[in-house]
Image (cartoon, rainbow, N blue to C red):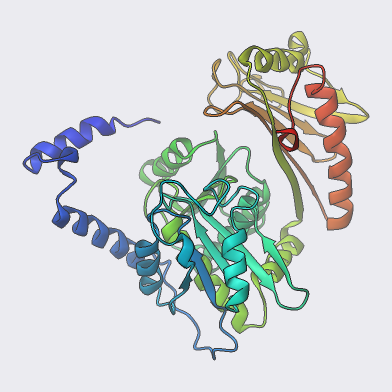
Length: 414
């Protein structure tokens, strides 16, 4: 799916008379790009307006740029969406290459939102919106004023909220056929939503180079309007504005959504539960082991392949099908046993689909010494589904990965 952006930049540089940074250092060019981006948001249909609510009904927002560049763009996003201003977290609003107030500058990481949530609670804010330092990811947390607890939403939960909102506000009345995309390791709830509502859902390999490429293909070659592309690692592309993860437009959509829900006496958390009631519960356990030796990763993958005789049972759990995106690739569900997604010998992924609906996926990180797992269990009763998932995760990880035998290190041991 790759585009030669280097060549595009060189062409741009020649067309604009050269200069620093491939001709992108011209303030006027930067202004034109920014203006074009926010105009694209206005033209996309994402800006649906907010209900006239009293201050007591409206949610209030705290925003953290997490020591990055997001603040001015987040402010302009709120203005573009017609939203009242948020409160920026002062200690994190300016760029700081040392990221002095966070353990790691990613809203996904444990503890990364602590300072923002403390600021929000002190100032009576209902919701924290958090961009990572380059503002392409979006984290969301909501405060429950009844029990005094925070809900920090996962990427899959934010994706569920965005998918349903975009379908309800744009998709269901669209003259174009609608599609949504997500990485294969993300939740299957958009698939369930699409089956019920009648829009196309497609999964891709991990990373927005795959999600964005497929979205462009669906739009340009097949006539679809792609309303959402997302990955569980809190990356979201809303409305087809740009085929990449974009935390600035996504925070405007989430804030608009929150205004609508709060007007009706609901919250993001309560509406998420309504989505589960419509399409089923989806509980997930995503995590990783530290693994510094690539040979161990290869060994684990080969153990799961079992010499080409893939396991039909893991512990007491029956396997329904297996997909292997290593080379040459295998999918027991396909008539020709070949997977539809691209395969790779250097970055393989193996998926076990169980007869009880559970899906377990495994891959090595391409950038860090981590062996990652993504395990999701669908069902109807959240408490029962969660208990079943907890039990299955222990069995699956032990039986397929043999962590002690392979010297895998849990994050809590680091």
